[in-house]
Image 1: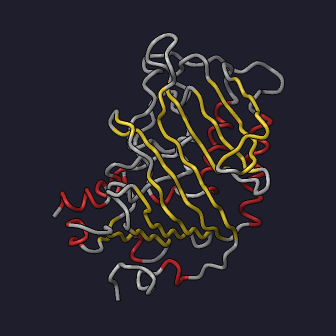
Image 2 (image 1 turned 180 degrees about the vertical axis):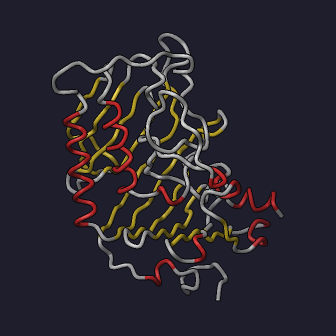
Image 3 (image 1 turned 90 degrees about the vertical axis):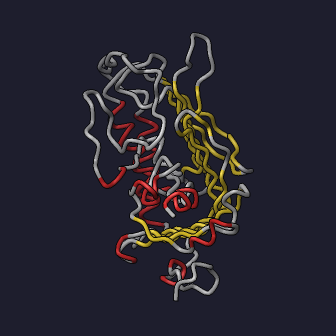
Length: 300
């Protein structure tokens, strides 16, 4: 039964697209907060591969006096966070995630998502690949004893039925870098702010802005942050955040490790994309209730 449940929940607690990944949002496995090593950056520790290119590296030097290259990006993130909190009550979208776990980069997973800001609530329906297609997940803050509910879409795994798990439990985190409680554009933006505030204390940081970038046909501003020299202070070698120009929220994030050899290519750690975002749909408790007749949790 445990083996079947682990397979069922391979993708259940995904994302945080948001990733709060870029920002280093992390999964706290078994409810235990890991002890941060010296030089660690803020945020959660991913349940999966972290940067290895900076292992054994020293600390970055303190930033020089004057405007840090990250300041304009930090300003955008802070204003975006305020805008999300003031103007977005809920949204639907298709989340696409790809993560490196135990040295292996998985294939993209596609999830139709409903997300409500207050109380924080998530409904996921997995669109693909076939191994997870039809799977559903619900999490609603303050309900179901704080647990998430999930079931497989078809096949032998569906015989397990609906399971109830703590979002940060070992089974829920199997095959995922972040718990479902870290999903969403607000969490992603908040984590980006945390990491930018940390990294601006150090030099060795290049920031570039690329206007008129496109993500799924949406016009975006791409902010690229690069730490050229491996340092234990930094979570990534290179990260890109794509801010939707109309919605003013991040709709894509990708992070890379330093190359494994001189002149090599950066190694993708994680990427999250929010497509077809539709805000303020008027979601109610029914949208995050496993008894909803439109869902297949089998809960009465």
